[in-house]
Length: 297
Ligand SMILES: C[S@@+](CC[C@H](N)C(=O)[O-])C[C@H]1O[C@@H](n2cnc3c(N)ncnc32)[C@H](O)[C@@H]1O
Image (tube, rainbow, N blue to C red):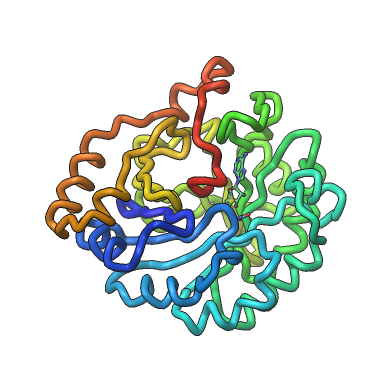
């Protein structure tokens, strides 16, 4: 689960609704269910119902889209407001090379259509760009989603975890991506929706929609980051590039009062000093960072 506001995420999830409500009372404004793949979680709809009942929480979810066509209506009925779908190419071979998955692009596109029909909007599409693997998919993806009402966001390839073999040479920068699209379909910048928004917003000058870039490598936004992540094992992480988390499960399951949990949250949050993206070099890449599948993207 990604908790934000301090914007916060649950990697689906040691969090039960009373815990999420405690976080909400301590300033969380947004919860993102991520993973891992949230749509494979048993009783996900029930979890969404409980989270959706917390006042003042913006509830969303990030998925690979493989089960979305089947589940979109039920997710909406459970109280999910909107959704983000990961899609790195429209070409099956490139898509599978990026993600090591065994389902075709058509399944994800069907999922996106089902989510739109269910009203899980605005839909964001996340495309991670890796040089030499899917950079040739940037313009086809931009063309495909221009005018669709969905917001395509390009993410700079990051050294998440410690097994993805990241090199700076793999990164196509947000600047390069915007320049590429702008040369074909002129863009202009748009103000952020709120302070700390991770995606930089751009719109087509002809009014045919919006794209975003997440420049977490070339334009680190650690100073404005308001995100925490709660893993399925009940550990709280204050950075996507953390090497260790804070044990929360004993507190959550051990009968701690709301006030005690609140104090622990405050202490962890005030004590954090994470700035990995600001200090990243090729030398920091081998650090034993927690894999993204545990704490969500
Ligand atoms: C780790 S996935 C988990 C949720 C879900 N299974 C999915 O595929 O969307 C969450 C997000 O992380 C992003 N992501 C994965 N690997 C990344 C990397 N190396 N650099 C940047 N973003 C990455 C993906 O774009 C995806 O939208």
